[in-house]
Image 1 (cartoon, rainbow, N blue to C red):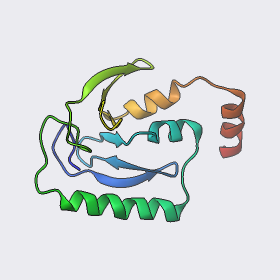
Image 2 (image 1 turned 180 degrees about the vertical axis):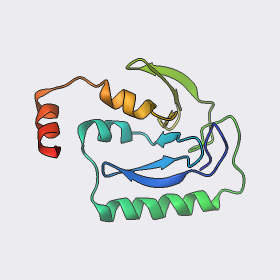
Image 3 (image 1 turned 90 degrees about the vertical axis):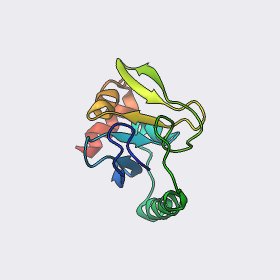
Length: 127
């Protein structure tokens, strides 16, 4: 998949046991539907699942002949629209539920989440 900002091919990387797409040029991040919630809850996958998911997504991306500019880089069905979440303006696809974060926006959203007892315990455990 190509970055919606600079059109460079995004790389698959792991963040807190969640496979994400990150642009090597601008630092933008694409999260598929449900991945933001996984990061917020600390509910990622084990390494085997992440590797299987990466292979599947890379094969799917390789089958694309053309990348359409101005539409969702994942489903290529609809225009992205802007939504404000925790004070950060994000680009969201209504069709597939994917979200694009400009550099450092994901950290801002994750830092802005409400602290619960469970979240506090996770922070203590993780150090």
